[in-house]
Image 1: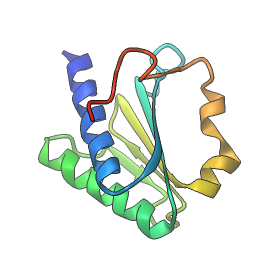
Image 2 (image 1 turned 30 degrees about the vertical axis):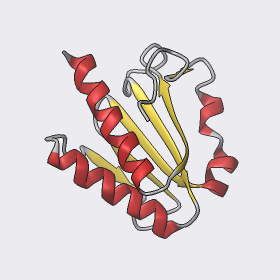
Image 3 (image 1 turned 60 degrees about the vertical axis):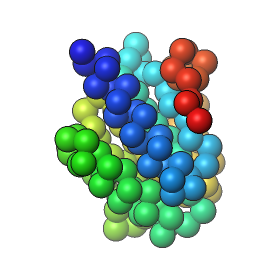
Image 4 (image 1 turned 60 degrees about the horizontal axis):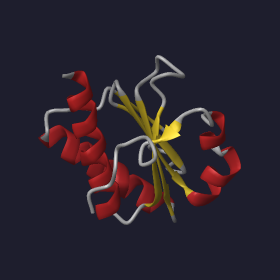
Length: 122
């Protein structure tokens, strides 16, 4: 049952990011690497305004689905905002920030979800 809930969260978040034109959306299965969550979603944006718009859209759609955000960091700065939905952690960041920190490299052992069986339905 938890897996279905996590999958629902991932799909809602991916759609919200796509609706706000985020790019390079990656879904990483980190369930074997950390207890922080099962899925990391990382997305890029062109500006602080777009980062905040994506985060606002995610928060609205997740609230509507009954999944309130547990914790949110970085909203004021806007170059990298983290959202914690328990089993799903979302990183929305400006492209330059994402390139600088390259957090995907930290999770090299994590399989991208599209390669691990969770495909996009677009």
